[in-house]
Length: 221
Figure 1 (cartoon, rainbow, N blue to C red):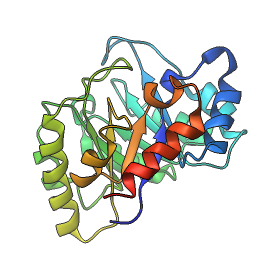
Figure 2 (cartoon, rainbow, N blue to C red; figure 1 turned 135 degrees about the vertical axis):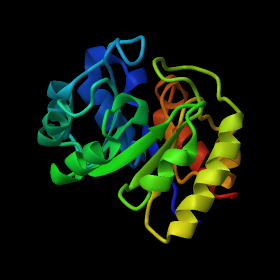
Figure 3 (tube, rainbow, N blue to C red; figure 1 turned 180 degrees about the vertical axis):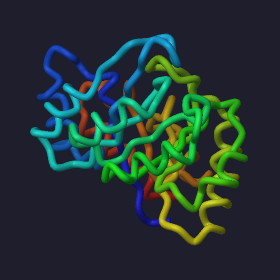
């Protein structure tokens, strides 16, 4: 695997200057902006919505990867699509009709993704892998930034990679939670190609130095 993507999560950015923070990580070499949406219902936190996504869209041409941690999902999908999201992923537990939600996302012009919490089985992929463009493995329990990487996610990444490769489709395998310079290579070896990093990047003194260090580690894979 030769292509790796780094996706800083704006959940860890400084919200009093969010526009500047988004532009800074793109200038520093990030590939994607990861946009965490939490509703204080599906997860115990409340973050940002489509209005903020639309504001960010006007600042960068980089893909915006929207991770919906909300329940129900379907009502808000069109709003994020209209706000400029490129990828919209959701948790199967948060949708009454998973296939319908996937088709809704694609019908709105976005790439659909499915998100797996640490204890969520990959068996949902038995019925959806031919319809989605991204699999997101959570390596922390969703709801808060700055958590420690759960190592069992490595086994789940390996299994997801096998399924994706067997499908023959161009599906991104993303990982989110506790990704840092010192573990990013191990995560990549397990099969991930898209790395969400929040506090590791936005909590550092120099975004470019951190992203460059991550790429140096990925180059070893």
